Amino acid sequence: MTLLLMAAGSGSRYGKLKQFDDLGPNGEFLMEFGISDALKNGFDHIVLITKKDNVSFLEDHLRNRLPANIKLDVLAQEITDLPDGCTFEGERQKPWGTAHAVWTARDVINGPFAVLNADDFYGQPAYENAANFMRAHKDDNTYALVGYTLKNTLSEHGSVSRGVCQVDGDNLISVDERLKLEAKDGKVIDEDSGNEYTGEEHVSMNFWVCKPSIFEKIENDFRAFLNSKDLGAKSELYIPKIIQDMLQAGEIKVKVVPSGGDWFGVTYASDRETAVSYLQKKTNAGKYSSPLWPNE
Image 1: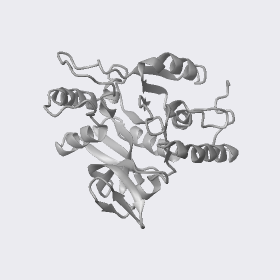
Image 2: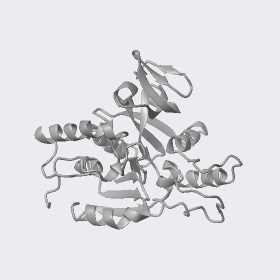
Image 3: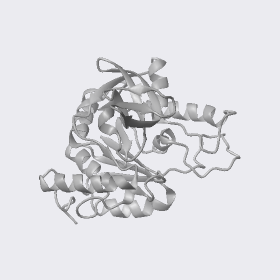
């Protein structure tokens, strides 16, 4: 089974590249705890999407730590990586978004895979539940969202973006991207739209189980995206939109798999202290080895 981690962000609100911040008790990156959880649940192929300048560093860093039997691919998400026949003449510094990050791995993944953010902590049970789903749906075109509860994914230090889900039983109906969610007076408010939420809603934290069929869909949508008259210097193509379009077209089914555990992110620099404390407590409780990798 394959785990794809997206680590090409710039960390503009965090103040530095949070993917490479030494949050663990022995200087581990946050993504290393997720990789450890994945390996414990049968994942044997790690794909990391990052910036070109970080490829060699991450290859060396992870290969020296991962067991020898684990396949590792570290790939660069590059603005110039476009579908055949497509061009982009404008100026751009920002990557094309999470869907493009996934598409970057099209040549190294040929089976079911889980995809998530490298700068989020998803909790050990989430990987177990995702792995069980992948084993149960190995041969069909059913995708999954590992879902969390909105109120448990907010930051005390500012607004956050979340995909708010409409769910029927364990079936995902839709995902509504909200970019400025913040807790206020016992409710959760989206500052952009003014929408109010109870906080009990299911949300996407970008932990998906996908099949290779997504690569063709991303490429087709990316072509249309590049030809859009509204394409701007910061326009992006997101995974939830791709999956939702496939869902509404009847091309796939998407199940909501309970995360079963904790989540935290490091959106703001002030989130760092919480992350360091949490990982130390988990290590002290024996949930993680110290050091995390036996060959360190």
